[in-house]
Structures are given as structure tokens and as C-alpha cells.
Length: 122
Ligand code: AMP
Image 1: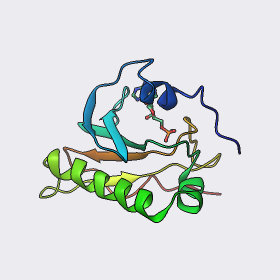
Image 2: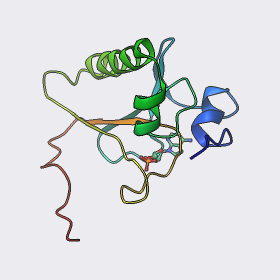
Image 3: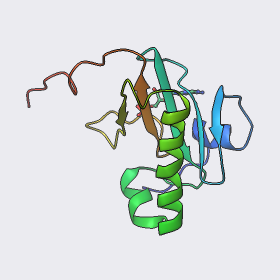
Image 4: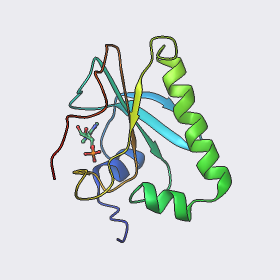
């Protein structure tokens, strides 16, 4: 799947639409989700044009991959989530209902999040 640079996160990276930023470095930008699903719901996105987790893992160089995941760890720590705990999730493709075709991690926290996901029957 080709990267669509008209997606909403590409627009945020270019500064064309605002975000509620919590962290930024050379590898990642993190901001509050516009429709939070937990008391704390932050998105962490790489700065480069990667459609999905698979695209990022396959195409980004090792420094970029490491920098991105270290940035996500910094975000969780700076949000005060290390001690109480948190959940990281990445939706990929149709069955996960990925809405925005720019790779992103969701960081959820601020309350007990229950177990994993709702049970799904195929
Ligand atoms: P996903 O389904 O994993 O692609 O999640 C996309 C997420 O992006 C959803 O949780 C949306 O609420 C969130 N989102 C969409 N537009 C914006 C925006 N302009 N600012 C912040 N979050 C957004």
C-alpha cells in the first residue's frame, strides 16, 4: 500500500492541522488522541512516511526503529505511567480497523484497562 500524504497524521506532521502535543524528538511526535478511549490516550507517530507497523518494521532503518520505540518509552514514562502501568496497541489493516494510514502506537493509561481486548468470535 502506497503512503497517502493527505492522511491526517501527515497533515499534523506538516503543521497543517493542530495537535495537543505531549512530546517530540527527531524520531517521533506524540499527541493526545482526539477521541480518547481511556483517561490517558496518547498517539505516538514516526516522523517518516510509513503506512503501518509492517511498513515501518520492514522499511525503516535500525536507528529510526530504535529511536521511535525509545521515544514511545519516554512518552509513557513522562506521562507517569510506568508505575501504574499502561497498554500499547497498534492497529494494522482491515481486521484491526486501522483508520489512519500512518503507523502509530496508541498508549492507554490512567485507569485499570481490563484484559486485552473484548473476546472476538470468528
Ligand atoms: P487507528 O484506528 O488505530 O488508525 O486510530 C486512529 C486514531 O486517530 C483514532 O483513535 C482517532 O481518534 C485518532 N485521531 C484521528 N484524527 C485525529 C486528530 N486530528 N488528532 C488526534 N487524534 C486523531
